[in-house]
Image 1 (tube, rainbow, N blue to C red):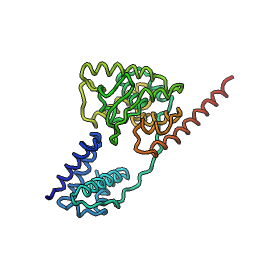
Image 2: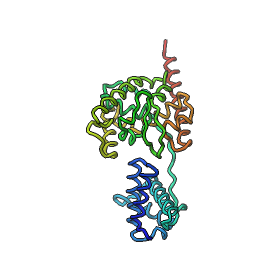
Image 3: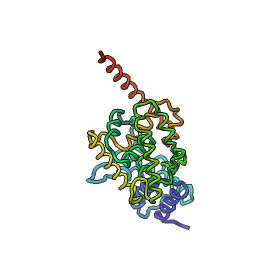
Image 4: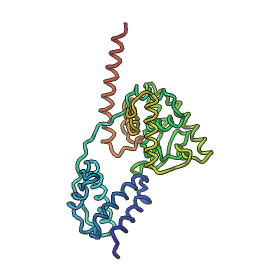
Length: 308
């Protein structure tokens, strides 16, 4: 029995959703990328695909005839390699393109939010919904796609945990109260107890009304909701006297990881708490944490010297 490229693609997307249980945002990314790939192949069999075909396709000009970034090329090559390998192993006759070159992407040090900047934002008169949203990133370390997707029924306020399938399919719960307790004694712990109370109140209220955790009108498109949440953060920053680009939603997640490192939390617990893909990702925060700690010590030293 023969299958068209589009049929194989549909089978693969179904596999991502049902078997691997990938997050909706991940599935959408794979579907969009692979539809473009299959469209480019036209009727060329998957068995005739060569590594150079993948490389040429990923390096094609984009909008306004501009070359793609290394990040974009890397992502597309990886997606196609995984798809071709899956189709090969499932007996669809696809060639493997493991040698297709994906441009290396520089590993940047995570950029957490400065302590004073976070406190300035937190001390501003914000709505409970804003505090809950921003705290989900800063205290619980959720990605913004997870923030806009989480439902009230997935939060257990008695145990202080959140249970949902995370990026990469991790089923491990987010122990947000335990994560916050590690910050006890640090300046950034300010507001954590209040944030927990807000989460408890919001969950109870929205469960009763059958509403989504963030939006009263229910769950919308994740991409649109993510941008909507980013706009709320920018508005809150302006209200607090900071620039609208002073911090991003993902920097809040970086801060959660960095603050846990600074608190002395074991790396393996941080890896599980943040659902990092590997030890390498978690280890990147140690350097950042050391830099912040040195800056904090220098600030304390200057303050001490300035005292009469």
